[in-house]
Image 1 (cartoon, rainbow, N blue to C red):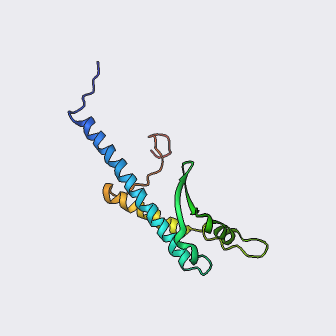
Image 2: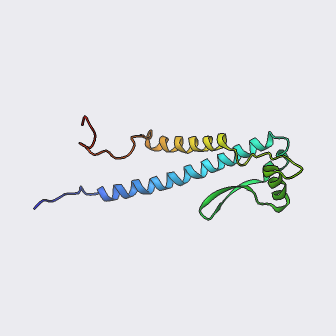
Image 3: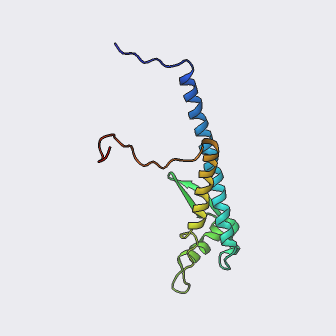
Length: 135
């Protein structure tokens, strides 16, 4: 009969690591979210049309998704008009074109997690020995 022996404290160490990973992941996500919101507000402040409502741009969770926009009804219609335009106004789509802010937030979170756990390893999917030529 084959047996596997687990060293004392191993399960506790794994549980502690997982709990730390959860705490650090949540903190990194919160920090990245704050950075994302600030980058979007900075972008809005630099745009003549958006500058007056920049400080009213916020992030919230809706149906499990992170949403960015303007919730205050006083400014929401102005933001919608700017973003999508109408028959008299050309659109100025700032909220739909947030590539730089998104990249900054992603890099922030990646950097924070790598600071705790080391660089990520992009090794692709699992590989099974003998499944590929030359192995």
